[in-house]
Image (tube, rainbow, N blue to C red; front, side, top):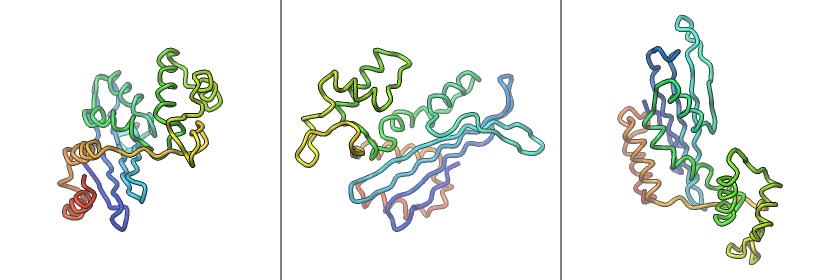
Length: 203
């Protein structure tokens, strides 16, 4: 089921993807997955935010439920479902978009700096360097200040500003096609209103 509303004044929309309760199986209690997708446009460009929650039904009689995992939980949600013999194609399809473009307006580093930190993580499995450690790593690699990314005419220093990265049009189109595929036919937003927003913004 998809529930979608405009954010107001035509600047974006929000979709709530809500699955029905699964049947109880040999793997355990019924589970329900919810995914929230918010796409907002401002003068700088499109901003994307995605989060989810995986609910476990505790008591059929009283409808009690508990959150197994929530927020930025895509890895743990996929892992939990897999461990219980379950899967969610929507979650798996949205995974690459979620991981690369969630909060695309809140990057502490440039693409070069982030690539350097990604290489460090690959070489040190399980480590997630925090701010000071990240700066140390970048300093050692000579890109604490990225001379290929200028801010106010100066090389950008990691962590001194939130950087915006524009989401490619093809990614936006792929995301919208995915949302459409899971049930915009029951969307409470008039279809023509959503289509106008997408058309006006070339999505």
